[in-house]
Length: 277
Image (cartoon, rainbow, N blue to C red; front, top):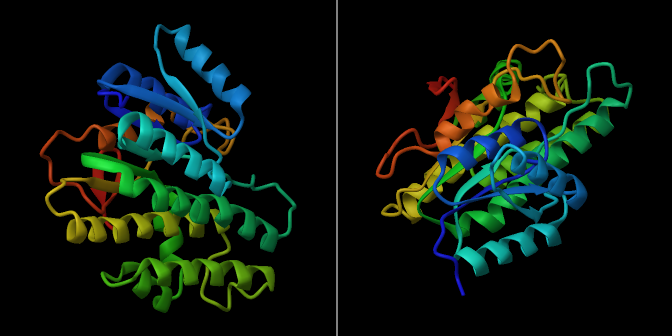
């Protein structure tokens, strides 16, 4: 039997900003909230941590780098809830600045998770998003600064209203291929694979927003990319100014945009404000 509860799904939410997003949604969202993570043990530990705070999230395994895991999770939410009301794509990875892994490898690994795997989640979950649903893709302030360091040709495409998902995929793959050959700078790319991956996430959000407005205009689904700010996590430095709970504020704000709201949609948002792109 299908649950009548609304449901929110947060990827990569066993720690850091993802866990903080689940914590806030447990307090503010009227429905079931799911911790999801690649590792079942870590996910269940996260649930226990929140249980000890008096909160009652649920857990489902989801490894965004594993297509079968994505399909299994999508089938579960389709079967149990007939879809999802809130999807927050938070799962991501980054190399520390001090990491000596070759740049081409860093580019491939970073893009595989942050862009290509996030895209796979959206491919399988966007059709499940219910009318009035909210989709939030966690991007980064580095996507905006990285964009400014791209060649004028690349900037033109990333600003374009007519860039397609297929074209974006080709461009993201081109960055990886050129990085592996040490030719990315000649190709017009910045020296930052994390920034490029998040440019991809932001632009993909805008592409999906245009698609939803065209294909499901009456459904009132809002999709946005956001920057959580510089947050103390394993990815960032211990000196970052924001706590994970502070980093969760903007993603949660976008996830809980009031019923009937028409904006923001297809925007890049930081500190609850639409930012220029």
